Amino acid sequence: MEHLGKWAESSLYGISGYATSWTRRLNQTMDRYGIQPSSKDGVEIPNGHEIDLCSLEFTQPKKFKEVVKPQPIQFVLGQEVENIIYKYKGIVTSLTLCINGCWMLEVTCQKQTDSGKHLVDSGLSTVWKATKNKKIIGPPVPEKKGVSSGPVTIARRF
Image 1 (cartoon, rainbow, N blue to C red):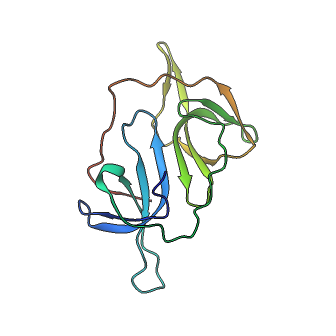
Image 2 (cartoon, helix red, strand yellow):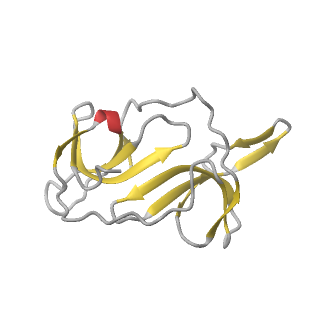
């Protein structure tokens, strides 16, 4: 989180830009930063990329005089939550802190099977702003030790 607002370069991917978000995912060993490259023509904004921390070098101090302090967050990875307006329930599978201080949650639904509840990775994830219309309905699910996707092999666009 301490690199938000700093200029970052990835020689592995040939991408450079400002760190505009920080993400931690359930069952991963490393954090990722959202990198926003600068516009080449001053008009079109290029696509941003999500890159593992180990692939980044932060070369300049923060450009922004002050990065907004993050809002307090009540959610943790693995918690079961519900959107009280839409009644969507699921597990918090990633937390993202944006440069403006807002938190975003990625929530993935669960499927009940004979062997218990399992996360469903079928595109049913949703991203929520961490606001008051969410409530915690269960304790965090235990992380599987030794299971990790590790570093990504390509930068992901966002």
